[in-house]
Length: 456
Image 1 (cartoon, rainbow, N blue to C red):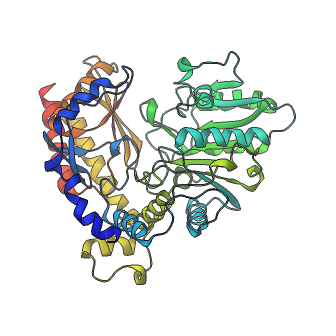
Image 2: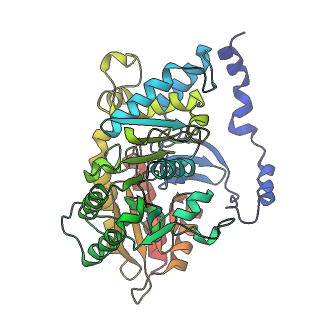
Image 3: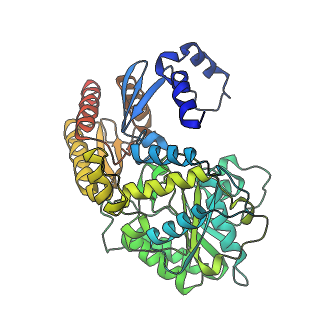
């Protein structure tokens, strides 16, 4: 009996009618500091919609791990099933090669448009790859360079190096008593990425970097600080930052964990901004939630990383690489001759053109709904922030002051009503998967409008 025949016999084990809902009580056994799951239990999922024991839940938060294809993408699932049924290895040591090691690595390099670059892909998360980027830059520092420059209210993960480099994480530091990190002021938020004008605040920030340039080996930045209420850098700022770094032989690191792989209409924020770093950290969105995988794409000069730090996890769960390749198929499209002729017509069209070809339409639709909310919620809703499919909606009080408590209250009310959004400080964060349909968008925002109206 082969795997397919066994799987058919096992299918009932995983059907919703076999869920033991009493297990939800186990959620209280989690650490007190964990995000404790609610009593909402997921039964199944498709696209931007989860079916739960409390009805449908429409996902405007990409499940918070950058699932740009939503739930159970048919192409990704089919490729994973086909690979598993092929009998090929699911995991390999770093000392044995595999065609997907090379195929996916080469494809990621090409799609990021990092010229003359190398890649280190790893079976790990975003924290590990940002730490690897910092390590690679540090390894190749010039004489006298010992400072890492980061930005206030930045977020680069939950490892020890990430705590050092993250403005929002410094309160969690341990085992470290002195820090080589200097925090520059966060970039001025812009409502238009494409602006060519530097604000006075951003000029001052760059001048501070210039003043210490001889001591700085790297600058790490998130093009959009999602965990800082969707604070969005301008193109002018990133271009000038690149110039300062390049002229001073400082490595520029883009943390693209939140922005990479389609969220801004391009594969990377670097392409959206027209500014490429020396090192780019990617993760999570690479597989759209279908397994752990990170990638550091960098200039070739940074490829010589200390043995025992970078090489040991170059091995990977091959299934994650298969998923990443399928995600790129979905976003960018594939040659028509590679598409099965008898598949669903809509999926056929999407694979032929790539989902990014629909991006402008989805982005425009999202922005219109957010502007309608802004008009409806005068006195409660402030600015719309962000770009593309990464948007923040500021919540304010009657005096126009940012109101984090109300934002949290709204987020919980929306969850109870069947809409999942993220909340950070005074901002509700909208990051819907690119596969969200017009029907899902309309239904979700209909519920949001009711909640907003009830709080006016």
